[in-house]
Length: 297
Length: 65
Image (cartoon, rainbow over all chains, first blue to last red; front, side):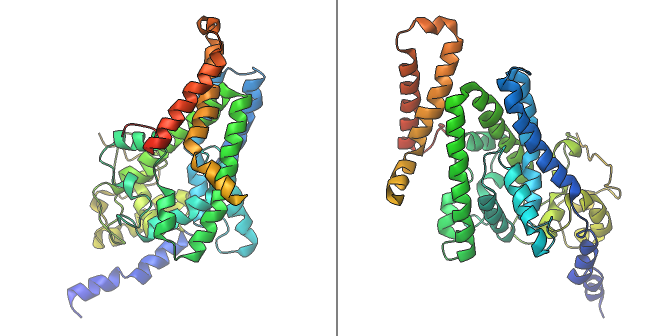
């Protein structure tokens, strides 16, 4: 057996998968708490602001924070990380996924199916629904794309995956929820115009900008297509606790069933595999990731 | 019925301009006492919102990007 073969055997996909599986078992209660919690806080802002118990400006700040926390719990649901393959718990994925996204005014089913395509075709110009934002030239471009509401262009991907019946079915289901959300937004703006602007629409936009920058843009800068090449390890001046640890997003692309809060430990154990497989930036991963803010100026 | 709904929804930017932007402009104008003297201020606010929406509908996007 030559050196190359023994190295490839040492870092085989089977071994990598076995390690990853250890971290893909735990019930993701923290994420459910964040998803349901932020939705409840956001909903409670409405009576508090309308009855002038708290001022609108403070409601706006709290709503924006809620919006920044809204996507990740849905993201775990999109991967079935609450039900973990148990059909009796599948309602939990749907419940958390839908509820938490109300703050962001996004339909869960549309995000779920397009996100699955993002995983399958990451960095593919034609088939990756996140391509426009993950390959944007600058943060300014992302801000403008999100504010304009043209990113991502979901209708385009409905046509791209026209032959995928499961995709179409889920997309149509999500489109009805999108319509309901839009209708609710319009009713609310007639009844409570400034509150709807500052408790819902603007926080949703700001939350979407935050999410797109840290979930889509930074993790994919300069990356290519391919399982080990489409997402990178990166560092930033912002501590990872403020950007949902998206410096570690590459491990999610490799093993989406690892729970978000179990990713640091999984990375520590998988680091030799990640270096051997050539994950961009893997050589810079510190030996201890847990509790490490990963700050770099 | 479905076709009528589709037709209405195809003008979503114009509706958004009229209802959402119009309502917000109207509420903001009422808050600003200085604008209260303008006759038919509410009509103007909804009209401006609608025009913004129609322009966005024609251009296919809201911003100049």
